[in-house]
Image (cartoon, rainbow, N blue to C red; front, side, top):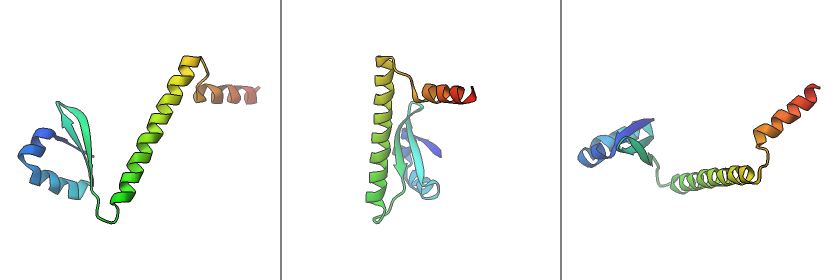
Length: 91
C-alpha cells in the first residue's frame, strides 16, 4: 500500500492517478498522518465496494463499543474468557 502526501495529490495529481491504477489503493496523508483512502473502482464494482467499506466501518464501530462497554462494566474480554476456558480444559 502506497502513502501519498496530500501536497503531492494537489501538485501532481496525474502521478497519483497513475499510482492508483497499479496499486489499487492509496493512503492520503496530511502532516504524515493518514487522512483518506483512495480505492480503484469501476462502474460495476462501485456499489459493492461502498457496501463493503460501510460494513467494515460499522463492524469496527460495534466492536469498539462492545469493548468499551465490557471494560466499563468490569466484564471479561473475549480473550480473557477464552483463556479461562483453556485453563479449565487443561485441568
